[in-house]
Length: 184
Image: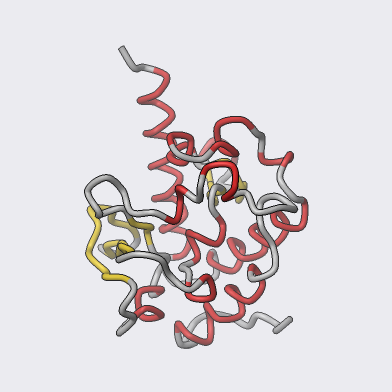
């Protein structure tokens, strides 16, 4: 495994490639969890516009890739940065998946009440589609998967706007939980 250096001044390819490689050989379960749900997380939504939020500068990793298109999302973070959304146009090569797909159904989270300490949580947005997110706790997933996701998310915090991006994801998770708890 490569040693991660400070991220300032490092190209997106040099930053993200070792993170992708770190996650290449781990999955949430020892077996293919896609068998449980017919790989619903790898399929287009009903309207063909399902996508994954890209981490800061990750969009540059997908420039010119035919399997996906990149659009601006409505999520803002950092110094007026807008998150990009990668929308798949069918099945992708697993080696080309964005970081959000590789860590799914987990999410980096920093809550103000926790001193903004990084936590890895089950993404509440995943509960609508992922049987793992609905029925398991994070600690029930493969320990090596959790460990590597934590390492990758720790590296994201070193990016310019990395902490702000994770804070934005945390706000999305909080909003999702709030809406579920207060549903009429």
